[in-house]
Length: 399
Image (cartoon, rainbow, N blue to C red; front, side, top):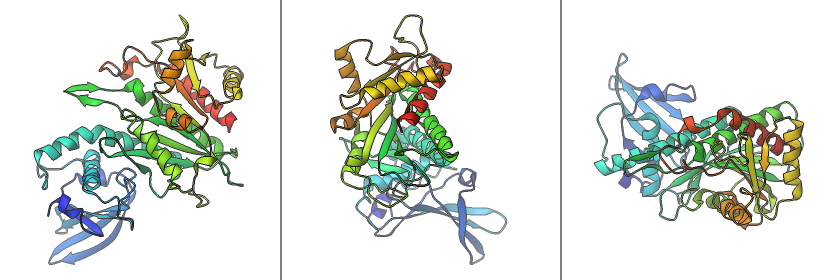
């Protein structure tokens, strides 16, 4: 039975693949659920939840080991348990599950199950995105964020049907009185990848933004853990599909509008009228396009007409109060037209179009953007750290 045929099964998907179990057991987030002796061969069944592999539709993955009490003689069964809602169980989603498993664990031998060469090429093309999503989910879990709807991953609908996944974490605003409003802090993690044999690293656009967003999440969670209460809960999002006309942010907004997201603390629906404001971090690591000649320590904050003057004023206050000394810009290099244009080129646009106050933090476009030379060595880590501190303090004060 092929994996595509298996998609029609109502409860479980069983597929024969061989994975590197040393990676599977590298972490302790698995448990033994049963063991039995079958005609002299001892079977041990392990269960493990994956932040990435859940994909918004899969609950858990079970690996079965077969050994003769001394040596492992088989280890290639994967049993995927599905939730009651079956509308996401499609051929594309089943293939996406196996893509994700492959990207994380790889095969431990030359057996490729029932996949043909084109399927394997798709595996490899998706590998970087899957690893990035898994990294973000791990960061969220390590920070102590909560899942929404029992999953880190939320589906993304793209125009061409390519499956995508936003990675979403939740930080409660207060331990005493749970707030009834939400702030969204996001950064897109997708990029061009490999195109016609050329690799586009995307260090500034937008690994820098994802690193900044996860660092801010960690700092706000630490602040919250030592007794600080916020007036809003915070939803952190690593957006997928930004390079596909903001598919990730649009999909998240559609889920909020449809009442599909549930507050993990009180069980209530997260609705669009409860979104206080949105923060997007995109291209935040470069110092190659300074606002003023000779000043590398700069940052640009752009907002839509729905933001209040207090947003800009608070950034100035934080910059001065914490003695960061950043060169602040509230337009795109002084041009009103370019400010409007650039503001609409990233994920905050979706929220702004729906009348949600939305700001974007950036260091601007450089000659390296969307080119193979957008590498980590072109980033200014010292200035990036100062920008992260400023964004953190600004969000903390706005809460």
